[in-house]
Length: 417
Ligand code: SF4
Image 1 (cartoon, rainbow, N blue to C red):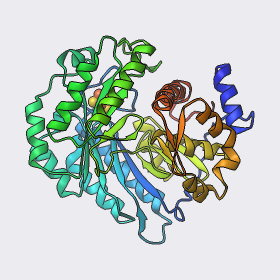
Image 2 (image 1 turned 60 degrees about the horizontal axis):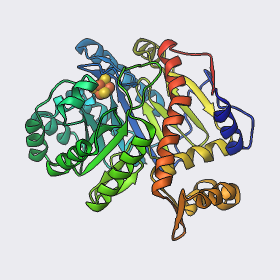
Image 3 (image 1 turned 90 degrees about the vertical axis):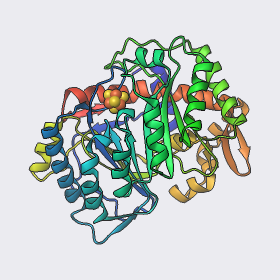
Image 4 (image 1 turned 120 degrees about the vertical axis):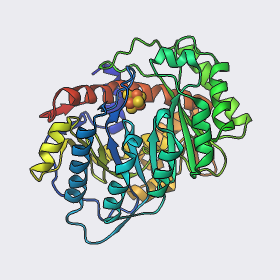
């Protein structure tokens, strides 16, 4: 762990204590009294494995998928066994992998979850463009899905080739999403590849919004150490200029930025499985964030199913946050949305944001990273760029290390970050 990472962590947490995850885990999760809780389900199957992709996934196989869904349903029953009655949750997101590959099973998973939870704010599913057919979309709609997110990456053939992605027929995708309606139709793109121009990114944005998308995400390529794709990122200054051009262009078109990397048409509910205060995660590699702890399930499908079949949760690592660590985690993801309301912080932690982080917020304003919008703190364009940079740094310093170990060991004894 580099000096800069350690120094930043120590300053912000006001402690030299690192983030320590251990293999000890709670069999009963303390979530019943949490008001704002979301659900996440991980489906780790794809028809093609992309070299740049860091997520927990494997090639689709019908038999393994069936076995996995059975284990997943058992995990839901294990987690919810002590629940006293149906509990309100905000949203349910299916991520992966390519969850739509299991379109025929999603209804069963959703109804199992609905036996324990009232989902008040919709159900989202990620799709690979190859899965976007009228038939699949109708199946999703029938089981209650309200938001879809299509991992397009780019409409540009050269960019797709660089990424090693198969060609797909855009016209078929557009026809399908215009035939079956959803509240949110999001499309994901990748940017900051070496040689990628603003004109090419702009064409992706325009094509998406002109053909049925009402929300887009533009994620920078991040080269994970354990998944070296060989695909080169553009130089930092070029990336900074490109992000500014994207920001200005989306603003000029009236698209609302609802996080560092996402934009939507006004009034559209964003597609975001990460910006929730608390969530329960099911499936291998799924994470759970509660008031005082964060936990992550094993990445191994076999270990996942074996643990569940023995009646125990498939948790691989857990951290019990110090109060200050939990506040920082909250702030990190709130600033990702570009807007922080001090009252929300006070509601969550019972203390004033200014009292605890006054110096950092003052420095943020002094250096032009933050501005006041009423009583809220809004990231400026400069702040967005540095947050984007920080997010990449955080990903490589923490997530890359954690996922690398999790890919090698189903249940590591301990992890210190
Ligand atoms: S990018 Fe999508 S399709 Fe490719 S391996 Fe990752 S999850 Fe699967």
